[in-house]
Length: 192
Image (tube, rainbow, N blue to C red):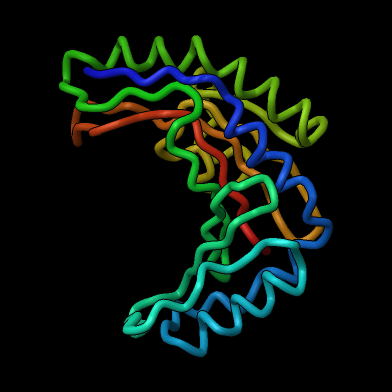
């Protein structure tokens, strides 16, 4: 197992960028599963109208046939990936993660997540305020308590409500079968 343990500076910037959006309903679109240029064009229009994020440039030769998401750059330099139903920050060099896991590494990966979760949780509370729900794998109702399946594949989960969205801060649940290739602490905005 290999470990990456970096300061949370980039996550702090990304979380602050997410906190600046006042109405996620303006970002959300019909989550129909459709793809193509018109879907991406509508998405770019919605996001730029609701935020100060700059869309990636339209590169010549881009094949939009299977695309339903697009990237945006925030004023702080965070890359956000946006689709009609969710938003996540493309922050790869921030926080703790474990990768190249083998079955024997699962207990060590779990311990690492448990050790680093409180730091990420504190950052979430500092940035987004008190959550509406927070729990972890020790709760026998964890998987379905917030909504059916919300805790599936997660070891820790905290949720904040925003107009038109739910912010999820979570850690992955490492498993030996099927083997988790990597685990870490992440956050995603689910659009209503």
